[in-house]
Structure formats: C-alpha cells, structure tokens
Image 1 (spheres, rainbow, N blue to C red):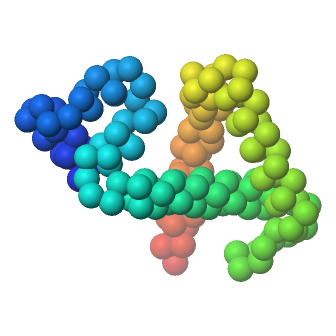
Image 2: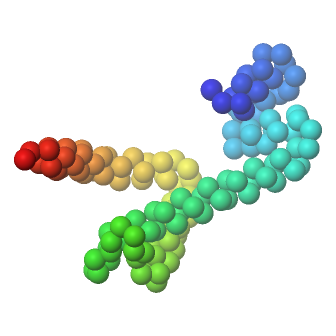
Image 3: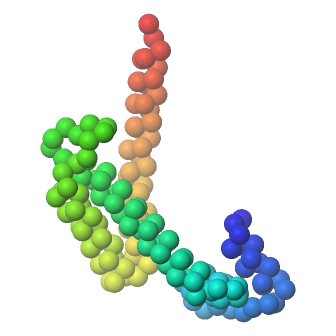
Length: 142
C-alpha cells in the first residue's frame, strides 16, 4: 500500500476525518479530501493536478506514437520517429474517442471499451511472446 493509502486508513481508524464518507459518496474527490487534512493543501493539490495532467499527456503521446508507427507505410526503425502529422492525427483521434465514451456513457463505458479491446490484444501479445521465444531459441542454435 502506498503513502496515501496508509494515510487514508489512518484517518479512518482514528476518525480524524470523514474520508470514508467522502469515498462512499464521490470517490473522484477522495484524494483531494485527503490532501486537505495536511498543511499546504492548496499547493499540493495544484501539484497533484499538474502531475496527473503530465501523466495523461505522456501516456497519450506514447499511445499515439505506437499507433502511428504501426500504421505507417514507411519502414520506421527503432531510432526513427513516425511522421508527425500521423502522430498528431492519432493523438486527436484517440482523445476524441475517449472523450465521446466518457461523455456518452461515463467511466463505465470507457472501462467496458478497454476490456472489449483488451481481450483480443492480450491474445496477440501471447502470440508475440511465443514468437519472441522462438527467435531467442533460434539465435542460440549454432
């Protein structure tokens, strides 16, 4: 368990805050409710938002890079970048899909779509692991 998990459990056990009621009513603000019980909560909450935004932006950029490399007609090497227009297009497309799913069906729709698309992808990963093993095995043979 992490620092925030232990802090939340400590507050619930010692009844120093109403964090358990906040989590039960609206879990999306639970982290910020936890941070309010510590000094400099406004600064730390702002820093938390910046870190969350940075996480989402870098994850989106990485996903767009992979999608762009996989859909690129030109051979992209390990040290090459995919075409920037393709990368921007994929980032916008993936962002719009996520926004539409969140708007129309909320978090449940987004989670359902991840499971639906994740299961076939996991099968592909199993075959990729098998091929990786075969390639390692063929390199060891003289």
